[in-house]
Amino acid sequence: MSSALAALIGLCLSIVLIVKKVSPVFSLMLGAAVGGLLAGWGLEQTVAEMLSGVKDITPAIVRIIAAGVLTGMLVKTGAASTIAKSIIKALGQRYIYLALALSALILTAMGVFVDVAVITIAPIAIITGSKLRLSKFKLLLAMIGGGKCGNIISPNPNTIIAAENFDAPLSSVMGAGILPAIVGLLVTVFVIVPLMPKGDLMESDHADEDDEKLPPLWLSLLGPIVTIVLLALRPIAGIVVDPMIALPVGGIVGILVTGNWKNMANCLTYGLEKMSGIAILLVGTGTLAGIIKASSIKDVLVGMLEGWSNGGTFMAPIAGSLMSAATASTTAGATIASASFGDAIVAAGVAAVWGAAMINAGATTLDHLPHGSFFHATGGSMGFSVKERLKLIPYESLVGFILAICSVVTYMILN
Image (cartoon, rainbow, N blue to C red; front, side, top):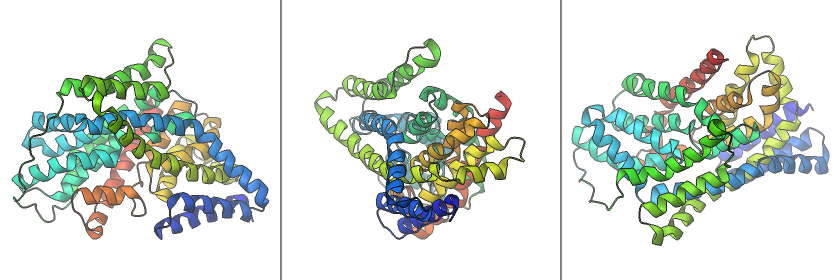
């Protein structure tokens, strides 16, 4: 059996197992093992390729764990809530969908996971939506759309690992997503959200939130600003500050300036818990990425696109989209796509920064399918049943598609 077909069978097996609620880590590892054995590599070579895949992403895993400090600070100090409430208050009820989408974008761009950003903002959306009798479908779609836009310009695991696999500066990959993110936000709020049917309107039965002791806005922003400045030193001044340093430093600064130094252990524990799940998932993802990278799948895809004038350019978002659909995860999708197709994309003449950026954007297209945790976490934040949550999939897929197309168009214009 050809290695490309064998790897695809292994990938399909992983998908089936994940859908059947088997642990995603073990599903990916088993799919990788089956793919290698069906390719005729034998047990020893199969294991070697799986471990090679894990080895390739180990540096990114270390950086992702370090990013937990910033995530823990934003959530546990109340900084994320302060930022979200400030944006919604500033824009007012008239622009509530824009306010929710912008809040999700900014929180995610600062390093909060998309699902955590949505869960953080959801109580505010529920209260405001109840007062104004708005559609809960449109409220959730606005938050998800904004979160997807923020995710392609964030120091989140998907961006870190795409940059690492392409050996590109993280800050440059984040910067390459800014224009697509802005376009995606505007299209989400002013085109896609209005397109969605309202469904049942929310009832006015939610009480106001209790007053919280939250830090002021300028202190809430200080930690993320420090991180962004440190990461920006590489392209601006040629001073390299690794994300493994910049992300924790920003988090610690945020903890200290918000007066939560006594709560530092709690912030660090929360951040580590959030990142450890991703880190373990990436071990399983790495094994499958190793098999796919060693197979001839990339050669098949190159052959399919070689007749296109910009085949190498389209390879990046297509790979990101397909792998995110397979894993229902932006992080896992970006990992497999960048590890497996990165060399072929660069060989086709695509700049490393843009290869990483386009894969990252493509990985937002189908990362919300029901066999992933994002689908259930975001639906649960607004009290959706599975049937209700399924109705959002076409619209959030459209958001991801817009981001991928805008990323490609921006690259083609600038290059």
